[in-house]
Figure 1: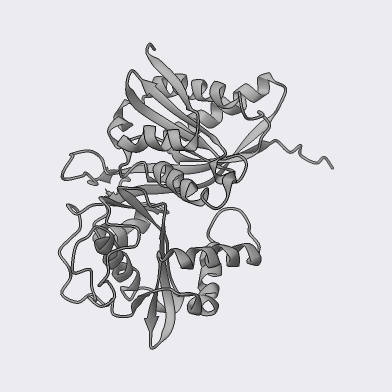
Figure 2 (figure 1 turned 30 degrees about the vertical axis):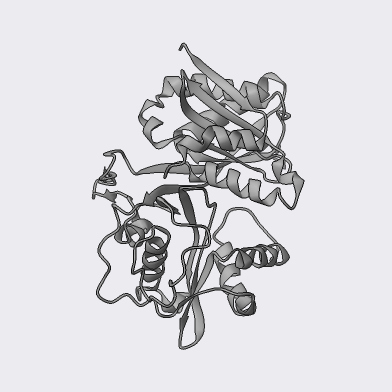
Length: 348
């Protein structure tokens, strides 16, 4: 294939500038993460360190890869929404091999890492990376850590506000909520891939609350659920955590939290209880609110809040999930794969 080229951006700032025109509902994990690192780099220079790549066909950006090997072992491999249909198997084979060539100029082939992003691209990249490692005498294994479905909501997709939306108990979390909130956060974390210590999870929550992007839901004065956002970019933000205590599930709490917060960050008023949302979002009003669901079946609550997850027919066919404004598919399959040295099996 002609006119395919891999560009390495010389710095975090250069990557942010180059990828800015592609700040859409499919690219939050890339663009939002870059902006988070840029913000954190104001206090710690290590967040500027990394390797940032764009895969172009002509002048069109087809794929982005960000590698923060020094402080984040999860690499990101994403594509803009309007390029999804162009990522054929033949193109991905060429493109991911170019990316492997570029990354190997800075990262050792035996490096253990995780890569998250658009499923077809991630799987092709992982296969190309491990194949290249074999030529260097290194045997690596690909571990499927989890699969998700990624989508977004916009002002054009959210439904009319329900006549009864129980959001009066939803409030911005403060450090005074930490001790009551940490058991819920720890339980939520048990569903995440990998293992973390309690101290690590406590540190994460202590870092989340001051960002003013975490909200708690109370029943009879007690916290029974929370919702947390992150990765804000100029046009997007992601709902990262949605959790309700088991005893309070199937009561509409998750839907109320997701619906109200989505409307709030899209600038659609009322978002529910007017007192709770009297001030504009600290991260600003966005064009897209993004979210990942474990699978299509689990996405029903998000679909009712305006997210463009498809419905799945009895024979497993996805139906719907089309953006009413652009006419493009509004969701994609995303995966997290782990790459590490193959551990020899023990013999009896």
